Length: 382
Ligand SMILES: Cc1cc2nc3c(=O)[nH]c(=O)nc-3n(C[C@H](O)[C@H](O)[C@H](O)COP(=O)(O)OP(=O)(O)OC[C@H]3O[C@@H](n4cnc5c(N)ncnc54)[C@H](O)[C@@H]3O)c2cc1C
Image 1: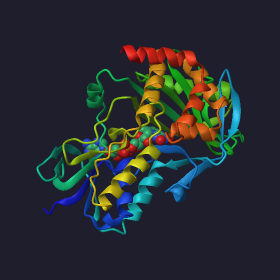
Image 2: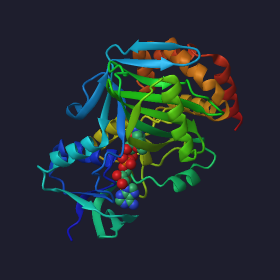
Image 3: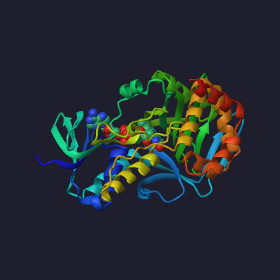
């Protein structure tokens, strides 16, 4: 069979974003095969992200907020986000949107198959699947093999952001749709950073999610009981039904993800290092990375573009990760001061790694110094 120009191994957030950006560039006539073992017909996740400019996928945004809520023992506030918005896209809407957009391009093909192996070759690469073997000049993979990554990470810091959320419907109108809750620390910390994240869908419906930053996952019943206690005792909601749920794990590591496997296999998505180590936010970083890859291909340049952050942000991430691992009881205070002492614009620019050194220093000096000095010291002697 004639080789493809590009194979996209994994048609999730990164794979479909790359396909979409390719379809918007001079490479829209390339022969592309998108392979996923899943048909992507379920709403397997929702993506929340902040932004100041209009998003590329504005038409499929389900919920959008101008204010965020922060609750802790140290700081409770509804904070206006100024020129920023927090938008939420449902996975299923994203998958359907990309599929229907690509339907106009017969040169973009979809295959449901399990990829058993990717292999670098002299002039390209092959994908060995349970439906046959396919070759291309380049393969872009977002297949994330956690065991292999943990093994390769060696002595790097490796935490997991793990969370379970319930979408609940209530009898009374209890949710305020003009704000979402980014952090609610009103849950026992018990040796790990734990908080709730709440996305109202309407006055009577919301996603209520229990999130931990720690090394090990919990038994499933522990997430459920924490959510139940939070709804009963903190939100004080008496009557509700669970209509859906989601569970997820996002890597939080300062491991340096390789940009490639061999010369013609490029890594994207979480597998390419697009998850922000200290927050787990990934969706917008995937957009930035896959857009650059598509633009490089369109310009006839190499698509090997490491998704690495500038050195100083890698250092900040490592310092914070080390606190989350070794001093997690400090997290509630640190995050409280971060949101209390900075405008949202300044903070989001810092988290988006684009504010400049003066902006970075304003955020860093607004935080209690001791945990950071201690963490920096620990990292230097590692
Ligand atoms: C439940 C959940 C909620 C999240 N919420 C947010 C959020 O609010 N904001 C944010 O910024 N980030 C969020 N993330 C993190 C991140 O944005 C997502 O994980 C995102 O989907 C990562 O994109 P990806 O392309 O790297 O991986 P995926 O989207 O998981 O895509 C990988 C694809 O590879 C396929 N695949 C795997 N193995 C094989 C194989 N052997 N053969 C064929 N196909 C294979 C999978 O089926 C999958 O479709 C969330 C993650 C989860 C799990």
